[in-house]
Every structure is written in structure tokens, then in C-alpha cells.
Amino acid sequence: MNSALYNASYRLLSPLVKILLRKGVAYSELMQVIKQVYVDSTEKQLIESEGKATTSRIAIITGLTRKDVAQIRKSPLTPDSVSQKYNRSLRVINGWLEDPEFCTPGGYPEVLPIHGVEKSFEKLVERYSGNMTSRAMLDELESVGIVKRIEKEHVSLQHHAYLPSSDEKEAFTIMGTDVALLISTIDHNMNNEPENARFQRKVCYDNIPDECLTELRTMVNKEGQALLEKLNTWFLQHDRDSNPEIKGKGHNRAGVGIFYFEEDMPDQKDQE
Image: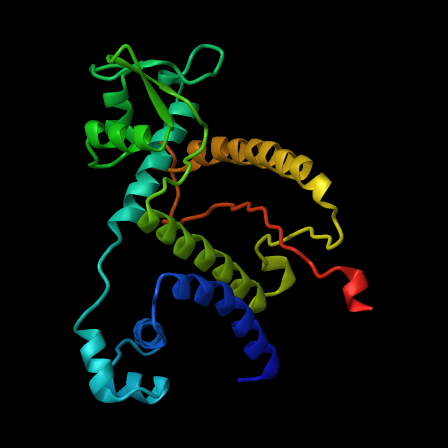
């Protein structure tokens, strides 16, 4: 491993290991996860390039023993139900914000009756959540404060974004999904010409006073949410699940992520 990749890996793993240590995860447990990733990734690459993947070939490429590889291949990961719940919740909120059937003439999300064959929360969930029941979706959105019941028979949308609950499992699912997508974009840009690069930018200054951070957070929350809502309108118009009339080939996932960060920096006087 060259020094640049080593340093990048160290920086990437440092915040993750901080979380793992806080949760009492030992080094040996993380190594099992890494072994799984090496086997799964190698198997996928071999199938794409050679049409098949044997235990012996995977062992040679990864440096693992054939016994380890065979054991890991017998225990594939199962789909993440938490991730599915998160995605379904997003689709329901987006449909409520953008589908004219569930909005006022002015374009605002309607207060919906919980049950009914037309223009109801039940109908909204049926259209946008896949096979999740309206009762389960209502309980989920209500638990994180996204919706509010009105006189027991109606429900209103309180926020225009899905805010992760205090459920730790859900928070970890979002962490794994979002960080993986960022790394995938960086990998794409490293292996393609600039004209085919995916958008990846950040703005960062390292001498901002404490007193300015509240204003900055407020501005980022407002402007970032506005941009995401504008992009969301485009996605709903072009996604087949939301607009079955859309024609074209391929089945792609695309999106845009925005996040805010801050960290304490050493005082300049301490460095002199």
C-alpha cells in the first residue's frame, strides 16, 4: 500500500473506529467484517470479468485461506430491512410534497384523512411505499415527528425531510449508506476523465469564530433544504416508481447528498 492510500485509509477509518470503540466492538470483530467485504467484492469483480468466481481464486486474490473464504461464502448478507424502511419513508414524504393529488391548489401538502379510497394517507402509502402498510408507515413517521395526528382521523406533514430517529440501528444504516455513496463517487472520479466526473465539491475554512457558527448552521439548513427540495421535484418527475409514464432504458439510482461539518482546530498561538 503506497503512503497516500495508507494515509487516506487511516483518516477514513479513524472516525469509524471511534464509533466502534464507543460501542465496545473489538478489533477481531471488525476484521470479520473486512474479510466479508474482501470476499464479496472479489467475488463480484471475478464474476463481472471472468464470468465465475471460485473459492480458490478468491483466496489467492484476497490472501485469505480457502477455509475462511468458503465459510464466508456460505453466510451471505441479507437485505437490510432498516434501509428499506428508510427509503420507503422518503418516497412517501416526497409523494406528499409533490403529487398534486395530495397537495393543495397552492402546492402545499394537504392534511389527509388517515383512511379512504381517494386522497388519503392510506392511498398515499399504497402508491409510494411498496408493500409497507399505512398503519406501520404512520407509526414510523409519527415516532420521528414527521407527521401529526389531528383529531385522530386526519394527519398532517410537519417536516419536509425524513429526520433519523433516535433508533441507533437506523442511524448506523444511514451512516453506512451515505458514506459508501460518497466513496463510490470518489472512486468513479479517480477512474474517469474529467468530462465524465460526478459532482463532488466542498467549501471549508479553518479559522471561523464560535460566534459565527450558529448563523452558518442556520444558513446551511435553509439553503441546503431548499436545494434538495428543488432536486426532489425533478427526481419525482423522472423516476418510474413516481411517474410510470416515463420511458427509457436502464434502471439507475441517482441522488445528491449535502452535509455540514465542523471541528475544533488547535489555537494558532499554541502552534507558535
